[in-house]
Length: 124
Image 1: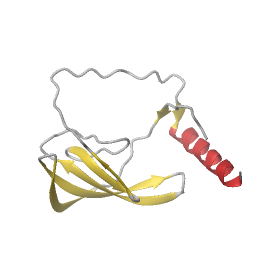
Image 2: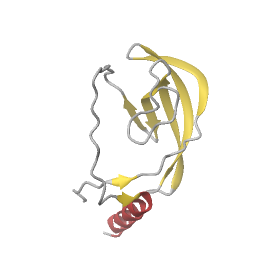
Image 3: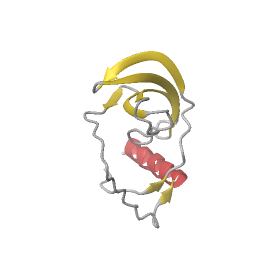
């Protein structure tokens, strides 16, 4: 098992989002559904992603790598897992700390590492 943190300079993921007509409430906000695709290097497959975003919060961001919709992504469904926002707060003063990335690996290097570790796990 790997107990080490890695810094990875990731490529921007293009999920090719398709916005649907479905609506639901998340934490009191009106959310809309979008469907996209995501390549997962560990299993070497393309997975469908369901995301629920809040258009009234115009941040093109969400959990982990999920981004690119016209509103904050508050919920993501991916291969049996669901990530949902538990709380949304506004902040007047937000500081974002720059990550030291001089020793970061590329996306390709990270995918190769994951493949090697997965293969080693299968062989052991």
